[in-house]
Amino acid sequence: MLVHSHERTADGQVLVRLLPALPSAWAPAGSVSGLRARGGLEVSVSWQDGAVTDWSVEAATPGAVGSAVVVVDGQETPIEVAPAS
Image (tube, rainbow, N blue to C red; front, side, top):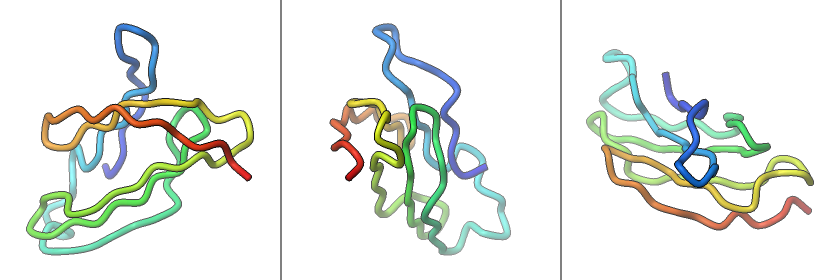
């Protein structure tokens, strides 16, 4: 599993977990883009040795949420999501 987004924070923001269950065969290195997350979000993520090295979250639809919380290795990062153009 590359993205997990069915949870919400206590204040209702979408919680986007990156690489919660990366398959061991993919662990050495890789990247993916265009994954969809709840709230109308589109996620891209790159990894090396099973750890996230880069990520981005953007609005995929005009009605996408305006903020979310991204979780990488237990570290939560609140983000503002720019509206889709």
